[in-house]
Each structure stands twice: as C-alpha cells, then as structure tokens.
Amino acid sequence: MFDFDEIVVHLGAFDWVIVVVYIATMLYIGFYFQKRSKGFDDYFMAGRGLTAPLLVGTLVSTFYGLDTLFGTSEVGYYEGISAFFAYSLPYTATYVAMAFLAPQFKGRFPENSTMQDIAFKKYGTPAGVVTSIASFVYSTNTMEMMGIGFLLHLVLGMPFWMGVLIGAIVVLVYTLTGGLWAVTITDFVQFFVMLFTVGLALIIAWYELGGYDRVWDGLKAFAGEDPGYYFSPGAGYLTPWTLVAYSVTALAVFCDPAFFQRMFASAGPNEIKKAFAAGVPMWLSFDWAVTFLGMAGAAAIGLGIIPEVEPNEALFAIQGEYLPAGLMGLAFVGALAAAMSTSDSYFLASGGVIGYDLYKVVRPQSTDSQRVRMTKIGILISAVLSISLAFVFERIMTVWVFQATVIVCTALVPVYMGTFAKRRPKKIAGTVTTAAGLILSLGYYLAVQLLGHWDSDMEVQVLELDLPGLGSVSLWMEYGILIITPIVLVIFLIANALGKEVHTEEAEEVAS
Image 1: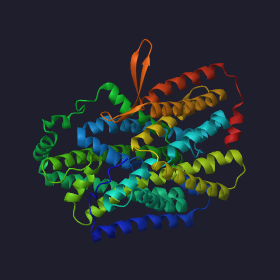
Image 2 (image 1 turned 45 degrees about the vertical axis):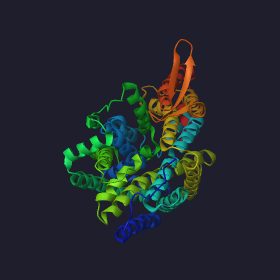
Image 3 (image 1 turned 120 degrees about the vertical axis):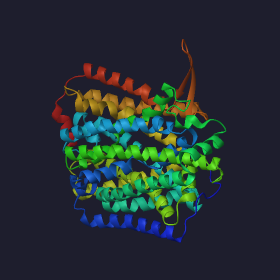
Image 4 (image 1 turned 90 degrees about the vertical axis):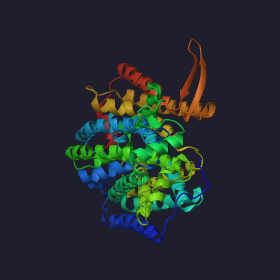
C-alpha cells in the first residue's frame, strides 16, 4: 500500500503549537455552527446563502485533496510538467465547462438540494434511488482516509490504521456538529492555508536550490541523462490514448454530488459565475506549484541535498529541508487541510444521500429534525465504510477510478439529458439507463480487478483479452468510462424512443 520505512520530516515545538491551534479552530467552528443551525436547510444547505468568496474557498479546497498533493507531485518527480498536462489540465477543462453549466443547474432547479433530486424529479423513484446509490459509492471517503493515514505516518511515524482513525474522528466531529456551514467555513480557512503553504514552499525551495540552472543540474544527476523531458508536456510517454485514459476520470466533475450541493446551496447563479471566475486560476496555480515541488524534490536528491525517498514523499522531504520552524508546521497543516477539506465535503454529501434522498422515499412526510438526524446517521455509516475500505484497497488511484466510473456511468447521461434536452425524456429512459450504468460499471470494475493484472510501468490495472478479428486487446481500468458511457447513451436514446409517455407530475410528486 505505502512504504512506511521512516519518518520523512520532524516537527518542532512551535510547529506543534500551530497544528494544535489549527485542529482546535476546526472543532470550534463545528460547535459554533451547531448552535446556529435551525433546521435541515441550515444544516445541509447552509441556508442556501453561500456567496462567491465562500464558494471559491469550499470549491477549490474540496477538489484539491491529498490525491492532488501527493499524486501530482509524484508525477512531477518522475516526469516533470507532464504531470499538469496528463492529470491537471483535463480537470481544469471540466471546471471551465462547469463555470457555464453550474449557473444553468441553479437557475433551472432553484429548490433542489442534490444532483439526485434531478433524477427523482425527471424519472421518478427507481432512477432516483439508483442515482443515490451511485452517489453514495462515489462520496465514500476511502481515498482521503488512506491519505491521512499515510500523511500522519510520514510526520509522526504512527501506524497507518491509527492515522486513519484520528483523521476520521477530527473531520467527523466538526462535520456532524456544524453541517454545511461548518464545512464551508473550515474549507474557507483551509483554502488559504493550502495555497499559502504550497506557494511559499515552492518559492523558498526553488530559491534555496539555486534557481533554474541548479534545478536542471540536479534533475540531470537524478535522471542520469538529459533532463529536457522534465520540461516537455509529453515527457516522452504521453501518447494520445494514454492522455485520454488518464483524463477520462475528470468527467466525474460533471456529476460530482459535492459539486452539485455547493451549486444548489449558493445564493444564486451570479455567485456561482463569480466563484468560478476566481477559482479556475487558483486551481491552475495549485497544480503548477505541486508539479514543480515534485521536480524540486527530484533535483534536491540529485544534488545530494536530501536523501532518496519514495516519490510520494518528495514534496514533504523538500519542505522539511528548507522550511523553518513554524512554517514546517504550517506546511503540515496545509496537507491536513487538503485532506480534511475534501473529507468533510464528501462525508456530508454521502450523509445527505441517506438522510435526504433515500429517507424521503421511505418517509416523504419527515420533519426537519428527522432529516437532520438521518443525515448524521448517514455520515457515520459513510465514515465506517470509508475507514473499512481504507484497509481493503491497496492503491488510492484504484479507489478513485472505481468511484469515478460508477458515478459517471450511472448519472451523467440521465442527469444531463433530463436537464438540457429540449423535450422532457420519458421516465423509462432514466430508469433503465441508471440501472444499466450502475450494473455495467460494477461489472467492468470487478472483471478488470479480479481477472486483470497491475502494469507497474504505466501504473494501471489492465485486463488482457483476445478478441476474434481484433487480436489482443488491453483494457485499462480507466477505459470503463469510455466504453460504458456511450453504451448507456445508446440505451437511453432507445428507451426514450420506444418508451411510453407518462404524466410528468408523477415523478415530481415523488421528489417533493
């Protein structure tokens, strides 16, 4: 799973003061907003009053977790700026697209609370329930739980399982108590900590290494060859199909439950537009900074400044070498912020699936207090599942590809056709499509995971098949979205063409 041989950095007394103050602040915010919460709309939707500054903070911090911090820096460590072009650029493109789509969703469904509401309203209970199941699977926090366990080991040397439990407890406390207001305000604080620490670390490290020329020398010594490929977008290995395979999971942004929750909790479409206008440049800046920190780590090893470490440890090793007391503690807090700002958002989103989306099917006349209580129960269920799966999966990227495949194949087509099609789709189209998407995505994952093998060169799970007329075909885990989504679209179009017309009010009554 991870290499746990040694502690990479050590924190001093002043660093620990910063860490303690940070955690105490997060917990205080949770308890503070618990007193202000006056019902389900306050707890789950922040009173539908999120303004542009708050949206920027919560969106940027939510969608930059430890997978970006460690994953992108690791690719930068090995391959240079292609880390941005292979991983970050596709996500930035989806954020730009959502800058135009998100206000449309808010304008068309001003009373919605979740993406799943669209499926309930447009297609009825079966489609809404299946979409909710896919959203719950997607919103489990296994990736971040694994990342926190890994992070606490790097700094404290504590066992992986202990780091997972400690991280989960802290995030759960302020999420359970304060709801979306607490999540948004803590994300806002974490947003500044994340960007400040990563940017400052890059400036200091690049200066202390001696600038571009010395970094070049270090990369040359590290790679044992001309390091020019570190500054090439393709890095010598990014074929078009490889780029497609790495980027398809970015489609998950289009149907991300936490994203939709923020959209519907906003004060209006204009606030969303302002938030994206400010947020996209910040996403880009964070990606580039993390990429160059990975390169700086490789250069520092080549120059003999730091010992050789695991690729996903290089970012912390370079920070530990150059950041003084206090700033190193802040850097550690920044990494914690990256994990916690993502974890709290998805704990709340998954809790809403149980306490809002599914509970309204079982008890449509439920009270505010009942929905809040069930949402908190849902958060706890999600936490137990996330922690359990953290000890089952061996690689963070395996978790991410699985979750992205499930949500895209199940929700993307019916949600967007239900929202933007000129004529309202038929109920059967959404019912059949969501069911097919969930079944096919789960089946594809199980087939590739159980029957395939791990390709250590490309770092992907691959299933080799011999097909008549085509010969040997290699199916990457990432190809699931590319293969299944068009199939789901065809199923939707056929079902919509052949299905019988239904009264639209029927579906809307279920969701009300």
